[in-house]
Length: 413
Image (tube, rainbow, N blue to C red; front, side):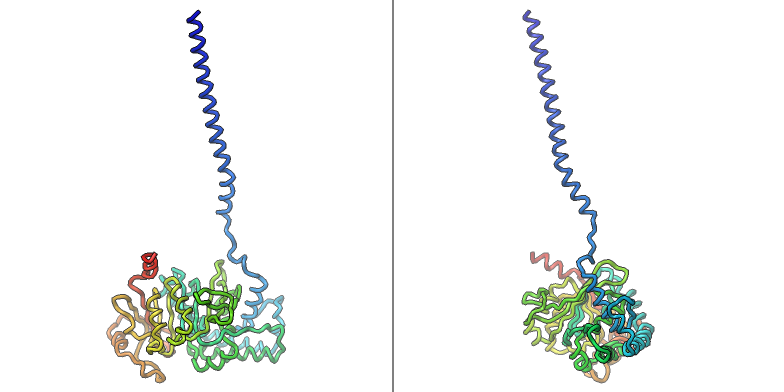
């Protein structure tokens, strides 16, 4: 009897043990299932979100973009669709004359100049453009044309000049005489750069003081195959942040645009301010803004040799301290500004002496550099003050450590 009891007890114990193990297994499965189920909703939410690509153009007002682009096309002598609200302007004799002017002038410019400039940039600036840099172009006026032709892959362009931003008219609200006047103004402002590759400073003071740079920027943007997405009047606050313009700020404009066939918008900034030492002392925001650009490429053309003067030393030093590359003709900075231990220099074209107006800016050391280097590649286009083909010069300066600025920031942090 005792043996039977013992066997019964053992059997019950074994049964209980199996029962408890089964319960634990079930609990484990249930618990894992619960954890799995608790994760499922999260996974289901994350995966589709990560796969959805938001349209970078969705934030722009399509109607506003079309109006801005059509206005630019009118200024550029380019035909509009029949359903454009500005289509009627094309029926005026003034606009037809304007269109004929551009057909002739731009065709000539493309053949003699821009095609060659773009080809040279594609070959000699290939590595720079592949990085989609920020381009800083001081003393530029509204010369988006050459900045874009040389650096067509830049993510942003920062142009600076003394000329005011200005405004653009609503052509639907102008009569024929007013339309003709606005179109003549823009043609007059373009005559030098179409012929000589640069704006004459004195002419800009007269032509652009009234209308500002916007009409010219518009023309260059659509003539280079870009669509304007948005325009904002902006300024730099005391901390060099871009804000909606208010009195007391460095005045400027921000134009969002997109090249034909692309999907990522880019930005063009133009700021109207004095880049002399006294000007930057009064408005230090511009210096801070340039310093905050990430290893910008600086472009200098027809810069009136201003940075040869001690009164423009601050902007010169800012460029040298912050740029990863500098592309310039001899009117930018003198050769002696480039410390050979910090910069690699490549020369192009020919250098003999400056034009008569700037004869006192002759650089004997630059002349020696050109005479002593038989490997210098020629330039088959004119750029800068020596606007004849095979007469111009360009110098590309590259910092020996192109990541210098970013490394310094890491060390500070």
